Structures are given as structure tokens and as C-alpha cells.
Image (cartoon, rainbow, N blue to C red; front, side, top):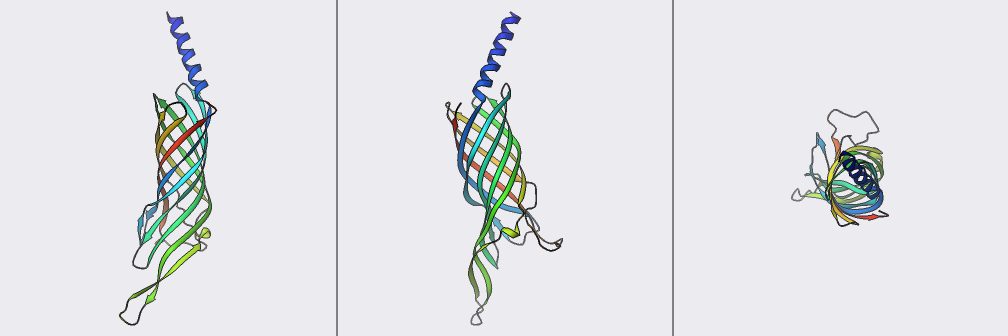
Length: 210
């Protein structure tokens, strides 16, 4: 009896391993914000997108390792009496996640390493006041600000996926930045803001070569 149970367990683990080696594509929406400490403006989420590919490598039983390579448009909106603009940060992200499969549900968590490709700002900036009526005057800005942000970003990810058959899944994830992404050419002041990425993601998955 014990031998039979061991054989069934080994067969089950072998089946799980064989089924868990696959590539996939994923794409979805971002709700991203740049938030942190010592901010003098209001920060809001902006909706954008992400897309990329992943590989699922089974380690043992229901536990797998899942590296991903994603293009992700992040950033946020900044509002105050002097400005109203959005910042777009274009990242190439590499999440390396542990994936625990419980029935059709995948629980995922792990670190993410990000490389900034480019950064842009667009919106309104206060330039002065009209001498007649003292009304504020704004100008449109649309500029590259890549040099104002660090090239590297380090985050932690956590989320889950729900399998919908053999080839499709839907998922959600929170990515919380741990590093200050502001970059300063000169010695920074203690009053300078500390900005960190925070992104909520909802996405669809297509599994290939399973």
C-alpha cells in the first residue's frame, strides 16, 4: 500500500513538473503613481499599460520559478497651484517570482529589477501672473526629463493569477518600489522629495509551448 502511494505521488509530481514548463505572453493595464516623502504637490494615479513575456520553470510539486521581461509605462500625475502635469517613465522590468499553484490559482511574489529607458513630462506650468486681475498664466510643457531619474529601480511584487483552461489566465499584481528614483546632479537637500514607483496591474496571459 505504501509503495502504491509513493508511486502515485511520484507520478503526480512528474505530471506537475511536465505541465509546469512553458513560455507565455502577457499584457494589461497599469495604474501607476510616483509617491513618497516630502512631497509639495498632490500625486495621482495615471492609467497606462505593460506587455512582455515570461517562462515558468517548475522547481518541485506546485512551486515554480517565473522570470518575466516586461515593457512597462509608469509614472504619475502631479498637481499644485504652480503645476499640473503628468510624468511618463518607460521601464524595462525583470520580475523574478516564486509561483505557488493551488488548484487553478497561482500565488506569486518576488523582487523586480527595473531599467529606465526614457522619461517625459507634459502638462501646464505656472509662468507668472497677469498684471490685470492678477490671474495666473500657464504654459504648456512637453520635455524629456530622463536625466532627472535614476536608471535603476528595485521593487517587490505580489499578486495572483487564475487559470482559465490550459492556455489562458487572468491576473492582478501590486509592485511597490523600494528605491528613491529621483536623481540629482548636485548634492541633494534634506527637503527634496523622495519618489518611489507604485503600480497596480491587471493583465491577461497566453501560455505557449506547454
